[in-house]
Amino acid sequence: MKNRLKVLRAERDWTQAELAENLAVSRQTINAIEKGKFDPSLPLAFKVSRLFSMPIEDIFEEDTSG
Image (cartoon, rainbow, N blue to C red; front, top):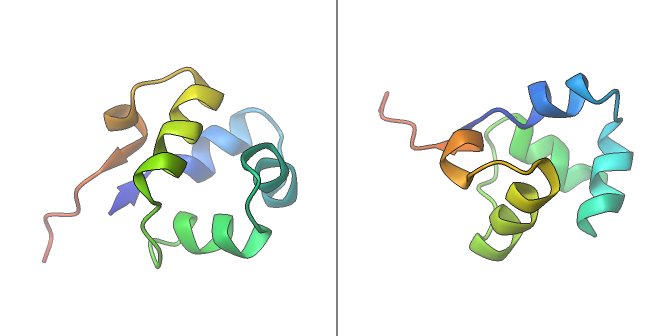
């Protein structure tokens, strides 16, 4: 799954650790999501959406490249 998490985080000058704390997950989870190695659960995707005040589909999108 593609996502804009790294860009959105950088726009706010947040570290991965700060974002992780805001979402109650580990920094490693944020790293894996940003690198596309881990797709967030639906509840976590909703938390991200609320945190950034954006629709989920503006943050995450299906990777159709293969």
